[in-house]
Length: 427
Image (tube, rainbow, N blue to C red; front, side, top):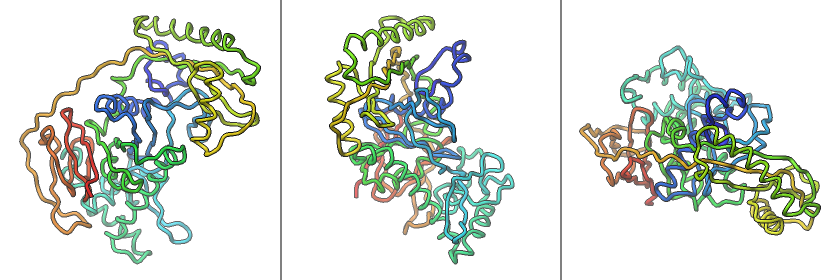
């Protein structure tokens, strides 16, 4: 799996390891894109919340790519999925800063020792501990009941944090969740509002083991009314690696004024790159007729450091598209010469069709549980018991082996035929 969302043969991957640095997050986006297309939700704002971090991305008809990504403090100038990563995950540690204010992350308890409630010696309070104390995680239903959580250890860790603040354990836990949610909401704004995209027109898709617990709150924070928790959300990257196409991303740096270039000259550059990519895919057994090709340019105004990517339809059309995109992204365009930075080609095979099993539902016990912040008992449903088209009104908790989903008050969820939870704000 490559960082740009396509796969590569193992024997070739060893020669191009730099292209696989973001393979996990890219797998999640490949699955999100495929699911969105299958159910008619092609404009998605996604967040992948795991144990250590949250990855946020925008899928607006396709997976966005960038050549300006970073791994830690290191810039990596190869094509990779365009996402914003923050240190907010289930294992993010809550702490007090020098001014006595409550903070969450970016430090993480990791897998060992993990959150205090894992019972592996961790003593620092985390987002997972807070969710457990609020009743959003159930001690006996974690990992489908395969792992029991230690609520006493979680309470002790959160209580130690809350005492200097004069807060009860439950108040501290609620504060941890609110701060973590605001960190993630801000990341979602970076990938939508700050790019000139109104999140209210999108569907918020959550995945990763912890995403479903926060999806309704984050959608509300951005004024969104539709959300989606896909089937297999806790392991969605693995599904993405099955549906991702074989692909190559190639580019060539030009750094010339557009006025100094001609359409024919640029077409010749494209053909060289296309032939290189085509040969690589043919070597993997891809049928020539199944290869789709996208040509694009990276453009910027003379003197700028950053560029925008537009489709190639001739220089005149590309220039017009660049001015329009610059205005949409930054609120203005300039009467300056436009510079061609890079020419790019993206080649990919036909996408594999993976048919997910139809939901049949089954036997299982729906129980009433107490959750902090709700006046009446909340129904908890094992996800395997749900039927296609069944609608559940919040507040409700849906448990499964790889994730937990909280349907908040004012929200309802309906199960699609493939098991995706389609959420809508009803109040």
